[in-house]
Amino acid sequence: MDKLKVLVVDDEARMRKLVKDFLVKSNFEVVEAEDGEQAVDIFFEQKDIALIVLDVMMPKMDGWQVCREIRQYSKTPIIMLTAKSDERDELQGFDLGVDEYISKPFSPKILVARVEAIIRRTAPETDDSLLQAGGIVINKAAHLVTIDGKTIDLSYKEFELLTYFMENNGIALSREKILNNVWNYDYFGDARTIDTHVKKLRNKMGEKGDLIKTIWGMGYKFEPEDSNL
Image: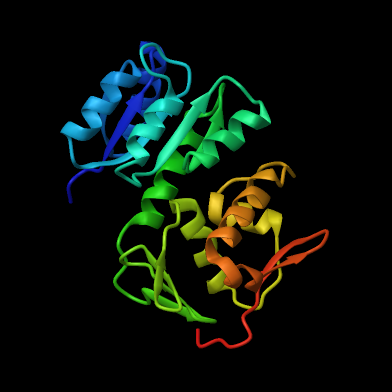
């Protein structure tokens, strides 16, 4: 099987080498970019990049602009690295379609675990690839969601979140459980990430967004009136 290719974008050579070494050990192929403009050029020249690890603060073009450029044409997963921990920066990243948000300093092993989790979830599946409930159909193999026959455009993380809800139809899910299963790590009690994604997911689902019920003080539950999961 061919190695999956990850684009690592950071203006610090030492940081690129650190991330690259850990990814290579986990059997990924790594290409590097030292600024935002180079990252965009490489991404569109090489059509087989499976995921991008992207720093925010860079010369020529910052990470936000790189994300905007790529998101116009591609939903390739993006993990954003930043030295900032401001909530506004995190929310801006999610608004731009960032799939993960990691503040420096971070554990390279955790970064690799998140890369592997995203890759695993976005890989094609052959068995049990269809989920259906309440007029919503998820095709996991095609990474496609339709509501009453109409396709809706979801980010990778929104897709994973809706899939997890539908796979646990009618089950009350705590924020901690959602974080551990959809994000594959613990946010130490910080629920902003889930609440932000649920709000955006509900908006994109229109009236069907009401099928995701809020359980006050706990989390959420997907509860369609009719279900043929």
